[in-house]
Image (tube, rainbow, N blue to C red; front, side, top):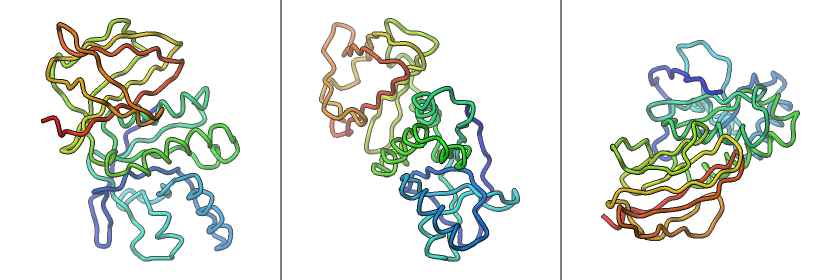
Length: 242
């Protein structure tokens, strides 16, 4: 379940996310300094880089964990447009669906993802692992994920075996093109047929590792994929072919 959060205008000392993909959790930090530090360290170990604090609407809702740990005055953080999306933890039926919903936020253009909330994640090891693995990927490759946005071009691909539970979209930046496909349902096999302008070259599988080759076809490159249930596919290619 996703909810769009509105970010307040930038203020003095506010940092922005040009090459930072913000990912974290909503949490009211403890008042005790020791407990506060322990909580922030736990969040950092989960690969989170921000915490969403309960604040008045006029203030930035995100704070950088590293800056908070350093007790710096400039910890406020503003994601790049179009802003952040919140992924509900409690209503997610499984860790796989939780992670898929986080990726769905990126497919919809989010520049920051916040899990709601930290206490629920912390008390459920499997959900915390799923959120942490998502956070590790997007923070490890932050310049890629911070820059990509949905690419709106008609008739770029069709899918044989399409289902309402399958979401697929291209995202792009000046440097890269990304195919993000999310199967929020049971296992299925689908075949993508892309427009001729999409390269048949080697695409990098960002989540599974290795390389993927599209196959030349009479109507454009094709790619057949057997999706597992609630599986996410992220393929990336640099724009050297242009």
